[in-house]
Image (cartoon, rainbow, N blue to C red; front, side, top):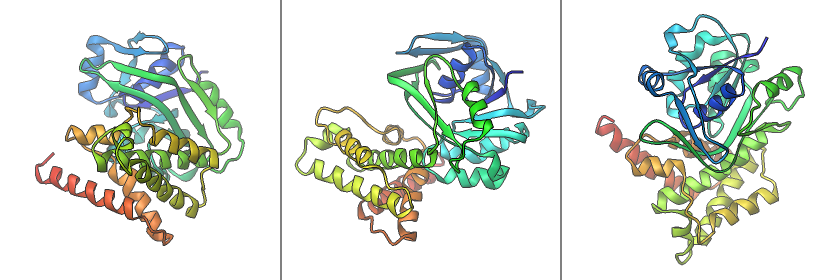
Length: 311
């Protein structure tokens, strides 16, 4: 029997990976909210992608329609939606269910483990450039997307190999990583550095890099994030740090962080997961992070203004 996969959400990330898996013949069901369900039932789920366009009419359910456990829960919601998402998919988690979270940062691992048990939660991360357009289509650009996962302990187990086959499809690379926690930390360093750069300076990587001292600021930001990762037992490899610095000091770059794009639209942001948790870990290890402290304060003020407006 094919493993039953529940993809939580049909947005820019979960929708992309889930649609590719469904198109390849895997047993995929999307857990969606009523509004998204109506939209996809009316128009289908469409990918506009550098890896090839696709359109499917997927299996979908809402939270109150879950009647049995699934083998794999592929979780790709925003951090601020995690609590509601856990309530929504809790009935889908059985004694042998594996939860593969694709959220940013690390704090969600503890939250999920406390709710569903540590053994149910694997490590996971993905690299994809995708958005939802005005018509609800998933638009993917850039390099081939990649989904990485593995046991948080790093142990090679039979279940992770079974999951590898279930989560493989044309249109993205699947990586079974023996060091998924390190992978997640290295991605966190990149996201926190990029988010700090764009959100504090209100511009693209290139906008900052072309200004006097802009590249120095980028390097100092990366150094703070690397210091926190190192103090937490996951120092990024030298090559990873060098690539991150090159990426964030490129004068021609139009790169921005998703957090900055959300902030620019007055939307909710993942400040606590990407920045706040990193600051908290820095303080627990007595690591000085003046730049991260500044962006943390900046984003807390932004979130306070949103709360005052009832958003």
